[in-house]
Length: 221
Image 1 (spheres, rainbow, N blue to C red):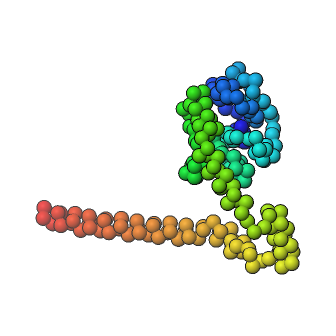
Image 2 (cartoon, one colour; image 1 turned 30 degrees about the horizontal axis):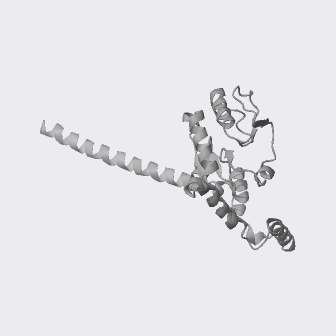
Image 3 (cartoon, one colour; image 1 turned 90 degrees about the horizontal axis):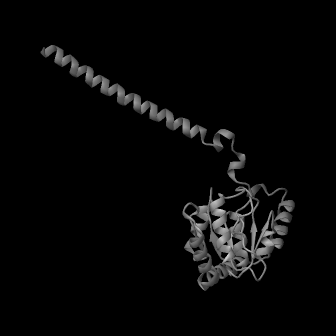
């Protein structure tokens, strides 16, 4: 289990519930956690300040990855075919995990309503239901099915850029844009000016008709 480096620790009650759930399974757990030691921690759970996440996911005995859904962790889980029990917290994590859940490779829990029973049942489901592992392994096979190995591809493109003097033809148009163009400042100012003129014309027309109507009422009086 790892929730990344951005979130140092969870609320103590949530941490205790997670630890209590881990203590009820026969599998061994490696948990990257830097907060106070949970009072419900079981003998099967090892707390560490840091772990070689990619290497651990590549171990054949790893059954489930409890994760926050960061891009790197999701990619590593796909590569090694390890299903995910997701606890999304911030930024792109909910979207990443929703996509994985839609593919049948992850189960998502809401950290706000989490307790030990909910976490334990979800953990057992991902552990024992072959649906999640089979779907993740299928994604892993697709991920691995490439014409070149990643290292060979990296070497090729490095040499390609060197052979072609930086490969300027591959640079995006944004590389040549000024700061104003890149951030669409000119477009935004044009739209604001258009809206201002449009609003001014509407106000002018309304005032004109009100003035005409007021003059007619004065004459009638």
